[in-house]
Image (cartoon, rainbow, N blue to C red; front, side, top):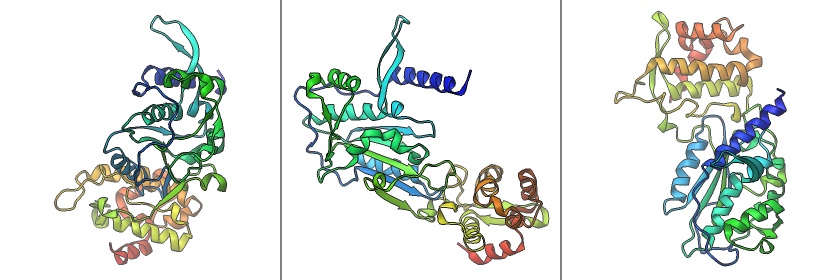
Length: 359
């Protein structure tokens, strides 16, 4: 079985799963399409939250999504990846099986179409509610190809409605006609209503990302999360190293010292540095004394995430200089040395920097 066949099989399985349990949608009310509703909320319609690894992008979106939907509404989350396509995002004809096990082809909506349909149905009610499509890792796919002609809809007017409409395909028109209880001839053109919000996260430090052109970026509001944003929510003390090398280390002090070193000595850009949530708050969970409860878990996670990231990504071309306190020819040897030496693997110069840097 070649790779193309595998991807096709995976797409079909995803379609069957999505079709089997689509998001619940309200019943369509009668009347023509409504794009400009009475909904007025102080949130951006098209928004991308970006920053260095571990700055809490997904957490920020989740927190603000809760605020957006506090009065009701619905959301759906999708994660982009290098093989993600317009076909998956919008929808298309796919094989589905009915309750008798018979397979037939019919239009199966993607996450964009599901949220758009629900928003259009809701827009015709007397109490419109926000509908939010969350896109994680938006730049890990070729966004120009994934959005296709939907790109035109991202230009919003002062009321949040698309300034320019697009012509929709025959299969999508038939789908919307059924869901919206409208004749197909009334669905030749389409806009985004102002109760539909599209938010995304973007990590520009990833190696597998695709560039966004200026025209695409211009249609989004960008929210930057700084390298130390909300650092007070991710902290804790842990003992690293063994024997004479044992030393109490504070996570944020260590993280800032690493960032300072990477910036000054290796001239790395900020999007390659470590945010406070590079390690999850579960790993950093501390007691009343400020000490991390599960120290062994922290150590193992630090090795598998921080040391791996430094070794294989952020400073891979500087391994010898980055780990002067140990044998850096293999990642496994760096991890073994870390168990014994703690931050000593970075050398005495770094240990001095850590002590001087403070929190």
